[in-house]
Figure 1: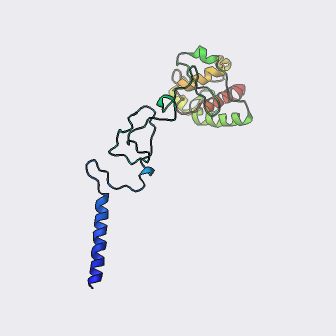
Figure 2: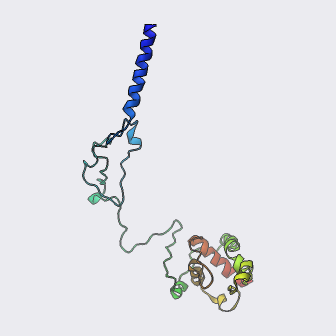
Figure 3: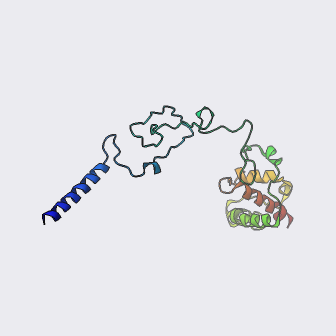
Length: 208
């Protein structure tokens, strides 16, 4: 009986000490299991802490440096984020350049060519996008007679007048930034999708 009570006492005492060792207080974070799994060395792009002892009181790093030290020793000058080469611009996964024409630059927009290859697949996708985003106002045939267009009034008939001869870039610009009563759709549609709508309008709507 004495042996059994002693065993219970030792086990209870051990459990209490184990739980107490995990408690945190003040600057002491408590006992951490596998600290490197959640205290990884983070190279922050916009900060440079070059003092290797910074945050030493908190550190559990295997390299012995302070927790807040984040200067990158593997890049020149300790940089974490490099600037792009001068006069370069990012392209997306399709290789398209970003569209940065201002709202008022319709003349400049007219000179931009459609980078999306004209294929049956592109036209089919353009048709679906047109039905989803454009037909409500412009109508299924582009004649400005969509249900919302009838309520709003003044919706462009894409088959009429000067609209027939508009360059691809002009149409893309209006889809992107809006014009008159038409709102901007640049935030709703990717660049590629906007160009596919342009293909559909030029190749199908305006040739019916």
